[in-house]
Amino acid sequence: MSAITRPGLAPAQGAPAPAPTTPAPATVAGPVTQVRVVRAEWTKLRALRSTRWCALAAAVLIVGLGAAIAGSGTPYHVSAGNTAANGVSVALIGVLFAQLVLGVVGVLAFSGEYGTGMIRATLAVVPARLPVLWAKVIVLVGLVLPVTMLCAFADFFAAAAIESSRGGSVLSLTDPGVLRTVAGSSLYLTVVVVIGLALGALLRKTAAGLSVFAALFFVIPVSVGALPQNIRGFAPYLPSNAGGALWGSPLGSANALSPWTGFACLCGCAVVLVALAAWRLRRRDA
Picture 1 (tube, rainbow, N blue to C red):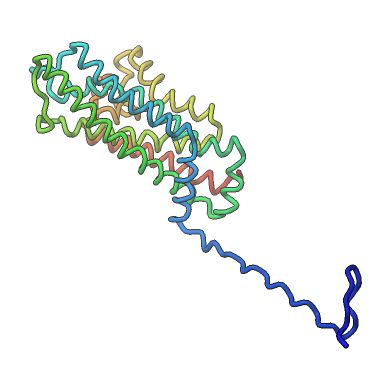
Picture 2: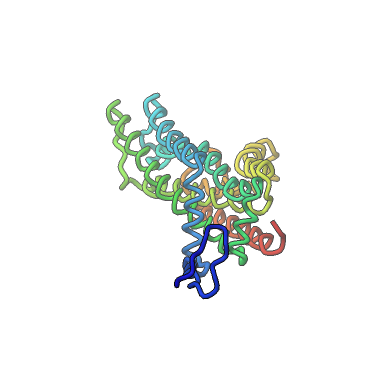
């Protein structure tokens, strides 16, 4: 006779034991690779509303100010003291303000995680640490370069169309120095956001990172103009002045470097700061 089991009672001796439940298979995420870290950093950056707002603000500053200046009647004619490239530099005045917005994005990309404590989880998943820094650099460059390049060319064509409709000279990308000026403004902003990222990783405080960034790109370049002429020799090598030589920044010093020499100097500054950030990331705990 088969054993009868009542609720709440153990099964009678000789009764068949219930079939064991098969555990769900464990999921394996796989090894931590640079590609996976880049995807994770892109997801984090894309999820922030501040990223979208800052990108929109930078686009409005670059394109909107250029169109406004062209519509205000600022001369773009080609003469001995005002070349086509200089005229385009005037239309790109919004780059000076967009660099502050993008500097904020760069600084917050690292300092924001230190402020919220998320950096501990990030470094726990990526114990090697440096892949996180490289991933943030790749993500920011991949975002800022195409966006600012598109905005710079949109600014140029908008300013050229407005100037042409007013009866002014027609600007062309084939004019000497024009293409380098337009594309150079995007390259400049891309390196600027990398410098902001390095400052955020190096100082780990948003206020400190933004203060140093503002000093490098606004306060010091403007203050140098008040110094005596004989002690301004370092002015062309400031990051903003050196990079500004590539796109013709109106804040550039009188003895500006050549365009590509200045850009190389700006890139050198970015490399040094990123190297210092990498060193501190490996040496100091979160």
